[in-house]
Image (cartoon, rainbow, N blue to C red; front, side, top):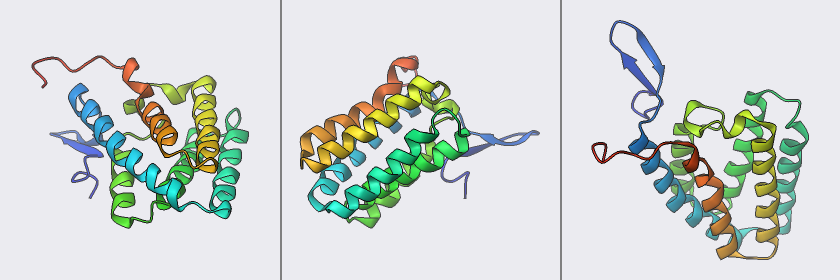
Length: 168
């Protein structure tokens, strides 16, 4: 159910709308995503085969080739495929399901991403990160990949106001 997963909210006498996160909810979501996604990335480095990296590279190249021409929906699809495949390499299905649920709450291109995906430059930075992630996996650099995933997730923080003392 979308309401239970906090993807939509009911507005009395108006119906349902896509949920816009408060500052504190956004901060907590990013903190939680950082913890679970960096853990999954470390596991993925340990488990990735050359074939896995080739598959990820193909997805990343398809994303990169579409940056200037594709719809946001198409780009979200390719970005989602990249991250889903990356985290699937962790070998932990429960962790992967939790990551997917968290990522859906802050979908790239939504009001919750700070507008990073509204520019070709922002999309290009995501693509550059994906390419760098592949290099780090090839080098079996768990720490480097975890640090990059952290930056990749938290790049949006500077675009939003901080949570006020009352919100905490």
